[in-house]
Length: 136
Image (cartoon, rainbow, N blue to C red; front, side, top):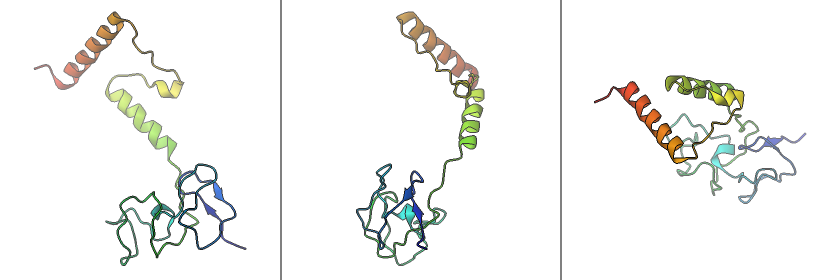
């Protein structure tokens, strides 16, 4: 059975791939280019040029198609974002600034529309900054 690959960006199955992968190959779902460092088995973001292959030329943009001769697609390239860590960080940031975490309640923050509301919002922001950093 042939190995299956998923788009490095969205995780959608890349069906009907012909190997070696063409430089122009794109995901049929999100349109992301696929002959990129992020889909390669040699990709390792924890090292200096993010490539395990020491003979490969350095590629500046790891998410754009390139001409690397060492490219081999990885079946495990897709890394979903950890939504729990993201929402936890947003909650901690909101708590740091004394705001309610409206993202968890899906309540959009109302934007000031009148001149008085804008001035009041600016004054509240200035007051919060002064409280946070100490008024000079």
